[in-house]
Length: 162
Length: 327
Ligand SMILES: Cc1cc2nc3c(=O)[nH]c(=O)nc-3n(C[C@H](O)[C@H](O)[C@H](O)COP(=O)(O)OP(=O)(O)OC[C@H]3O[C@@H](n4cnc5c(N)ncnc54)[C@H](O)[C@@H]3O)c2cc1C
Ligand code: FES
Ligand code: FES
Image 1: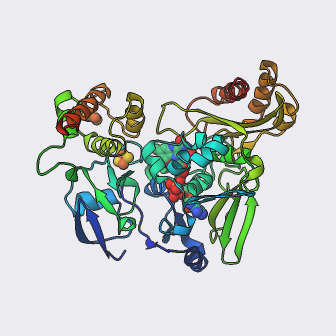
Image 2 (image 1 turned 120 degrees about the horizontal axis):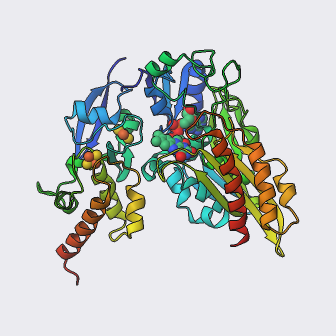
């Protein structure tokens, strides 16, 4: 099939790509843009390792066409760090064992980033419900709940209350 | 796995979309949220020449209450938007409850109500890769003439596994369908055929555009109960939706519908008559549960045994009725 020229906005930068219309967003990110943070964990749209934000909303990049995302803003795990250093949630996942093999972690980062963006102080139940989109085969999830709690506390300390 | 090759069309209006459908009717597939179609295309269950991505059609988005009439829901409204609509939660709670159980939060950000209504029927022998299906022998639903579920049979039993259609059936929903010859409206209960490999009455040149819920079915109490192995991500293995309207402690009207146990979502015949005019007691809940279990025809299309899934239809029906009675 003939390749088509599309514009993809990823992590605040616009890229021009020549891709086939059938190309999945995940493959465009990994193969064409060398953004290999997003992972293919299952290939049947169920594990969440490929989660990215599309206009701020978590979606599965393995289940979307890259060409369908033209005109939308995509954020991948590579866009989560702040000024070259780890975001609070990334650091907390490291500190608390929220990541073991790490394969699922980029997907969880995007899910948690969205959760904290819409709800700065979620209850345990809200955290569990938000994370129910992503599967992890290593951690057993408890360490992630602790990491998220720690990240929220770190954020609150960083922002002095007035 | 990559997708088969196709040409991508991205219309901005229903008119433009219907134009494309008219021109390419023999070889085109509608793509909404893609959470059903894309996994199936990976498995080479569909290899259309054209894919019509309708996501940019703004007029098919949104929930619009119409005073004195009911509510109109654009087919591209996501399940997440349905789940979080205050209007729907207040007036049509069975629908928000059912929408909230679909797949996972991220999949509900993507999946649409139109896609949920049009969802392909499922079977353990069908939703598999090409290599897998070839090794086992192609079945009636795709490329073959075998049925692994009912060997020797000629009918396809692939099971309808959407969560919102039973709720929509209880609410007497109607759907609007656009085609090159204009728009038509159809009660949702006439949309499904009950045949696994030809499960919906939608021509290849037709587009589902809107869902209507009449005001006459607003403000019923409603409950949806779903059987699945994990608390998230999984399709239903049995599902029960119930709506009840009460006056003076009696049931004045009620409807009951099932999903994931037949090739179509079905209203349980006789349930309304059994409940209407009665007080909701445990005995009555048992009787309706028996009726629901007799309507369910689960087969080995899905995980868990058919016997267990049928039994859970009985149990969930009973629990749903008692939950409404005790609320
Ligand atoms: C891991 C996983 C778990 C899931 N679990 C559930 C579950 O628990 N319950 C459940 O109900 N679903 C489940 N689903 C299926 C799916 O996410 C939902 O049913 C969703 O609502 C489908 O909508 P969509 O917009 O993504 O559909 P699409 O994939 O875009 O479309 C589905 C089908 O409908 C057709 N179609 C879509 N819109 C239109 C239209 N406007 N006009 C004509 N045809 C149309 C398409 O051509 C296609 O055949 C699951 C999916 C996955 C991947
Ligand atoms: S790779 Fe996308 S959901 Fe698993
Ligand atoms: S850390 Fe290994 S899968 Fe989650």
